Image 1: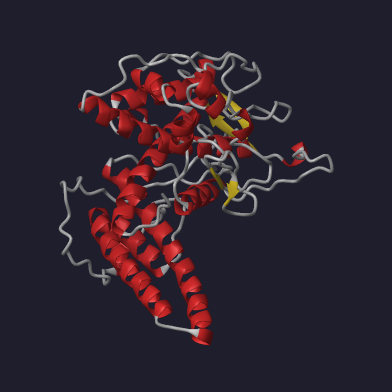
Image 2: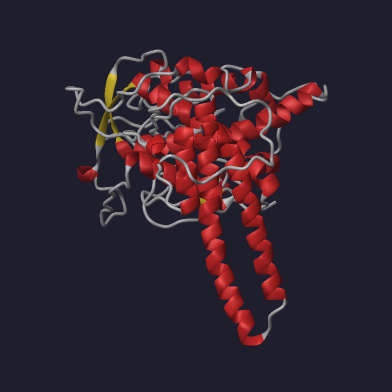
Length: 422
């Protein structure tokens, strides 16, 4: 299984890969990016996402929105005026832009609007299939080419629908996303984390068992700085982005296993004895995810949430490491066999991978990476961020929650428009 392990940080030239049971990474995108999904479930690395809300949010909509609800595209243009974007990623398709406007003016209507567009996507996909089966010869080749182009368009629309629904869940929870990270002109120190802290707001968005795991995750990344919210450090921007991205993936994984845990707990079929050894988890998740400070620090290696982190590096972000504390969910996960753990650690769809990558890039900008003839990153080109440990904590909490919401939304959308590969 160790051969299957791939670093979340991975190669300096990042691309998206989805964890596969075979242990190989499948590249989904090209170019330089913040996220590299390991060939096993990867867990924490941090990525910051910026989102600010300029308008008051509507109260949480009740348990259901009537499917027959009609959402009109014509709205008063003045209701869309806003100085700040609702999310760092700006949606580009007509449907994506329409959903962005609804997010600003009537966020509680986004699920109903998304349902209608998903139904239309299904109708369009069915129509394409019917055309192909009724064609032959030259017409068949043409229809297949047209269908391929339209499928790519539907994939982009589907990604933007997923993203809009994730953003809406943050709005519904009254938790603003972090805006795009740039040096602040209002802060003479040059700190980038000028956003308000919302640490307490995240706890109620997770089960008690899952939040214990998140606290362990924070301890693994920040070490003994986990309670320090005021000290400021200079950290490589690319590393911070990688930590955020891995934390999104960890949140996705955590929600998936917690869903199963809560079901078995309700049915009273939890294993009687949960093995507390770290062996399998250590192999699947890695060792250390804390981003190093400064230019001469060693590169970050992968790690799962549940590592005891024995070989910490004093130059890494949090100083001396903190051991993870025991929790029922942690022991439950460690009772999985390697194959099950790999399966739960897999990002199920290319669309979800695309969302993580695009959201990260929108938050941090496209990283500029120069590779030396020796195959290493040129340290003279590294961009450093001045950020407090409290800001880093907020980024990790948001990233894990983003991954958790992404799992929920992916499952919901797949129930209406099947796109997840089994």
